[in-house]
Image (tube, rainbow, N blue to C red; front, side, top):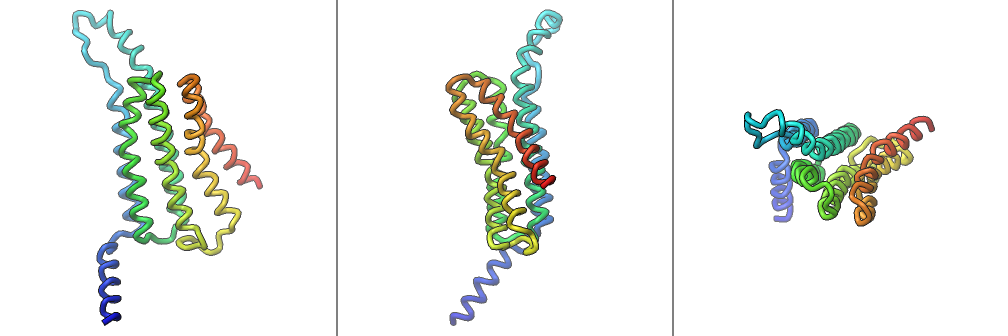
Length: 217
């Protein structure tokens, strides 16, 4: 009886995950990334100008769009950075199991959510609450690939056994560093929201410096 129950559970597991290979998961993820990046640009538009006052109001409307353009630029490079890190991590993972699949879906849920805080950032760039909300969402989103990596790399569960501990630690640091910078930017928003935004811009160059250091060493 116990053997039949065990075989039944094994059959359910195979049925639930049948056909979901690492390649299919990454293809689906790439599509979500592409859609999320495209949706970011929807807030960059000019509305409410009549032809009668076009020449007078167009310049003002373009100036009003500057926060939206800045928000788009920040969010675009953040999502692009997440995409690069995600694909690097998946390149080292040999196969996907149920936990990796569901962690991946949770990650994609937050990627799909990013156009919402980006829209708020473009409309209310000086509101401290928006800066905190944006930073928290970026921190959670950026940390989820790290959670996937930690699960896959622990005891070389789903990665090549030949990968050294130093390399595994390097990837872990590289993945978690950028999200942590966004988390550390939150206290500065109580002083000035633009200070927090400036700290956001440090995430990419600092990560690149660490990458360069590890490659040289």
